[in-house]
Image (cartoon, rainbow, N blue to C red; front, side, top):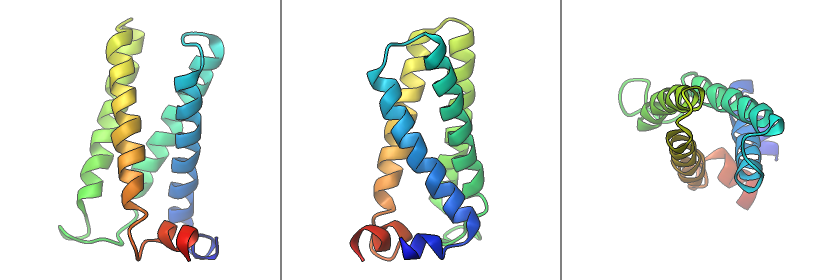
Length: 129
């Protein structure tokens, strides 16, 4: 954990919010949908994902396009998908809501998270030394 604890605060915030998002998202997939707790956890998850996406714009460890990297495009997509998912739920389009959030979980957290395990990245150091 030393590598993460010594990282800049924005990277720590980004990482902890992403890890919490993975956990809460998994819980959401397993629980009954539509109740009060689903909505509360969902709002928490959306807030965490917004923090993950927004905090990425202050992280410039990989610079491919000026100060940015392709991961910043994913962050824009994440923010847009959150808006689509919220609008779909409010409009009663639960299928679209589920589709947007499931794809965001899979691509935005699981797939993107896998890239944090590449040698040289902080989470690779945390998990593999």
